[in-house]
Length: 146
Figure 1 (cartoon, rainbow, N blue to C red):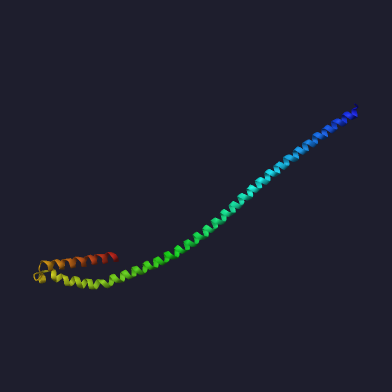
Figure 2 (cartoon, helix red, strand yellow; figure 1 turned 30 degrees about the vertical axis):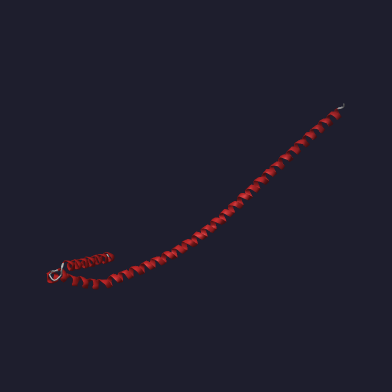
């Protein structure tokens, strides 16, 4: 064998080894590309899931805001109704003070000596019940205005 043949054989072996390494590198790069493609697809799926979550949360926030607005309007209506009820109660208490005073004024002589001797036990008891009830009503009215 000549030196040229040996050198050629060595060069051929080196070229074959280089070719083998290049093919191995190509296979490795293809595997990396497949892995990156799988990772990219997983990332796209994750992004899609996050976009769906964001859209759902935005809908929930809009619904919550809408419900909060409805409750705010309802609360305003209830406050107005409460104000009107308080005014009506105040007016009613004011309107009842005079007749209640008249009732108490008429019951007073029935309890003192002036007319009490003309009443039997049951009559005195009725006058006491009526006066106690009128005084309870007055206390309720006074607590309402305090």
